[in-house]
Every structure is written in structure tokens, then in C-alpha cells.
Picture 1 (spheres, rainbow, N blue to C red):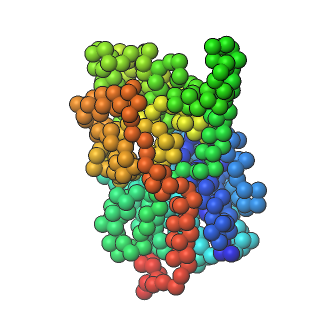
Picture 2: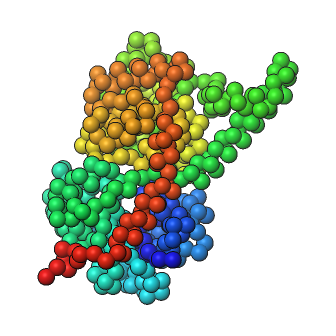
Picture 3: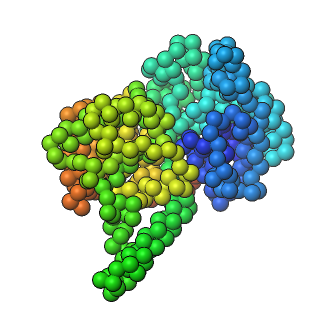
Length: 454
């Protein structure tokens, strides 16, 4: 069996980032494909939010090394201020000081054949770069988002820092992987000499995690059906199984109340704002098409609750909008399964990115309203999955029209569900097979990278 050293900042017990899922599921599933992983990550002190719910899913025989790291904003600031060089290319740059020695020790202990690192923490790629350079091992650099691109980072000094990390990556890495076709095209244009080393491995969902969530929801429905049967003599002839089946047509959370349209995850005042959607809700409410008895828009774990609530009050839709705190991962999946419909938001300036939850939405097999540029990767994924209600997030009239069509379909029981072929293709197992193939490529005899050429 071949071995891979995985360098990832996002790893349990970190909470609040979908990036944890990519590294964790790869580490779980690679052994079945002939690859034995070890993990180099950061000390949990650097994470503002941690949780135990995913720690139980870390394989007990997986070597995990948690190297020294500090968060400059929390650990190195005085009066809320700290020198900028301590946070370039990111606030966790100190991780490099602990991760390189720890990684070299882990390399001596586990004898990996290849190194894999994953961004969006640039320091993770710096760790991968130096471990590859010092050990001579081939390196695969994974990009979950583009790094230095138009308008991001906004600070020009930080942008140049990001660009410097990029140059190191594309000069040395044996393969670079991206989560969207658009991001791969962007970097093929930016680094044409590396174009033949670029691959796409999209994000996905964990089938095992969804099966666990389905068991929870099924138990809730069966208990609700049994309680309803025992409470009403008129329903005595209905079996518990029949009651459960009927309840599943509308979930236990919403059967007697408004339809729930759920957005699970962060919104941003600039990049992923629900402003146009709230305006469309306000117009629908004023026209009598929706009210609080028929619809509840739930925004779970927004990270910007004050912004969302103020916006809802200003547009007079506070009675339709609910903000809710973060949930453990398994509970968040169960909520997707219970929701009547799901909401996906992505701004036009993120056309080369797809929110990781999009793949979980597909597996949840619920209707999805997609507010994303029709030309972007997010909208194209949902269109291929057979989900037609799509409008650009910034297009007010388009959002209003899409919302009206979607709600009409939802209220009349004809909303489209994701296609089976799209669900199957998006599993983490499928993505892990793609990663194993890339690791095999990286270990094969090859031309030297640009950095190694004379």
C-alpha cells in the first residue's frame, strides 16, 4: 500500500468550515483505494470554534500530528492590533514554524510516497512546498478556492503575498487540483506551462453521514406517526408505517406549519447577500402570494445574524425570516432532509467557485432554489442536476421571477428534485477515487517541475 502525507489546516476538532469535510473524508476513504494516509494539521488552539462531533469519525489508526500554531489576531495582538507581517499570507503563518519540523518527523516515521496539501489557508501550501523541497517527495497542491484573483485579497500587499505562494506552488507541485472547472481554466491561463498538471476534483457529500442523518429523521417520523395514531381514535386503522410514509411527504418539522426554505451556511454582506431575495419576498408578501403561515425562510449559521435581521426588518419580511445558530454536522444534514426546500446563494464574482453545501443539497434530494449567475459553475452544476429555478443573485427582477416560479411549484407539489445521476456522481467516494488517480500520477516518473529544471 502506498502512503500519503496530508497537510490540512481544517481538520477535526475544527468546526464551522466545510473544508473539514474534504480532508476528513479523503483520509477515511483512501485506504480502500490502496493509499494509507497520515495527517499534519494545526493545534486546535488556533480555531475560533471547535466541536467533538467529527472527532469520532477520525479513523483510530490514522496518524495525526497537530503542530504548533497561533492565530495572530487572537494570540499575538496587543489592544487588538498586531504587525501585518505576522499575518501574511494569513493569520496562521506561525503554523509554518511548527509544521515543517513536525512534518519532517512524520515523513521519517511514515515514509510517504507523496505529499498532499489543501488551501484556502495559504500557509498549508507553504508547508507542502517546504516539505517537498526538503524531502524530495512529489507534491499535490489542492485548491478549494482560487487564491490570488481579481479583487481578492483587496489589500495589495496581501495580494502580492498570495501571488508569491501561487508561484511557488505552480513551479514545484507535480499536480494541482481544483474543485471547479472554472478555477482550473483560470489557472491554466495564468500558468500555461503548468496546464498539463492541473486536474479537477469537485467537492462532494458523505454517503455514510447522510445515512446516519436519514436514520435520525426516519426515527422522528415513525415516532410522530405512532404518537398521532395513538392519540386519535379516528386514525386507528392507519398503521404506523402508513403514517410515517404520509408524514415523509412533508417532514415532521413542517407538516402542520409553514413550508421551510433552508439556507445552511454563511452569508456575506458583500459576496453572498440575500438582499435581492428579501426584496422579492417583500413584493410577494405585499401581493398576498406568501405570508408567515405559508413560508418560513430559515438561515442557519449565517455568521452575520445582525446583518440578516436588520435587512429583514428594513424590508418588512422579518416575520418570514428566521436566523438560527450553527448545528453539529450530522444535525445540519438531518435538517436539510427535513426541510421542504433548500436555498443556494453564490455571487457573480465567485463564478469559478461552488459552495461545498451544493453537493449535500443534491444528496438531500430536496427542491433547490439557486440564486447564482447562470453562467457560473454553481448554476451549471445545479442545471445539470435537473434543477431549473436559477437566477443571478444580483438580478432583482430575475430573483423575483425565479422565487415566484419556485414557490408556485413548491406549494403545488411539482417542484423538481435532483437527478439520480447527479447525486451518484457527487459522492465523496467518487471524489476519493479521483484523488487516488491523481496521487498515482504524481508518483509516476515525470518531467521535472519548473523549479527543478536547469
